[in-house]
Image (cartoon, rainbow, N blue to C red; front, top):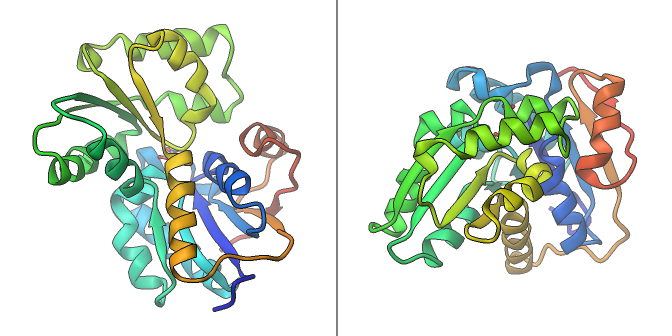
Length: 264
Ligand code: DGL
């Protein structure tokens, strides 16, 4: 494995580009190879078995591209397919988007009430409460499935009246009453972070996976002496190309990008 190999990142669509963008900012010399499984979007509504199969195939693809690290930039796939990806990865290190967030939140909370919002797949897996309670038995954790958010964002509805109404309707749910922290357990949600912050007016600590994951990536690459010192190269693949994905992708990665279609 060479230092200048790419970091392989995948998601069900283009939401994981929020993670890729955080890595680009924190580690500007790291090359990134991104795969968005747009053909099978949304993962949040699919069975665990289907997501495991998709994730296995994507991991095999990333291996053929010689990635030095694989990041599952999707909470839904991280919830149900982390073990499958690790087994398929042939010794290549794998980072999911859940563990770095859980570690951060569990160590920064005493008797606190943590809210979790994500897809049905993520909340039905109960992975956040389970993992949080292993590290912090006293934390109160309540989850709410917010299935409209990812498709809404993917379709370009954010920072507008429609998204504002949907966000307010979810955040005013009884499950989230009295929380001190809110985990954005979907890699699409950094795009609506401002609206969520405005809703809570600073009274709730909002935690997104992108920044926690990029810190974990830095530590892992340092520990394994795999930090690159070459100029970064960025490549983006999707399993089903549409113009609208390419247009939306720039909001997630903060620059124009070219998506290439590849059928796995
Ligand atoms: N970005 C995915 C996640 O973090 C969710 C979108 C989907 O349902 O495919 O869970």
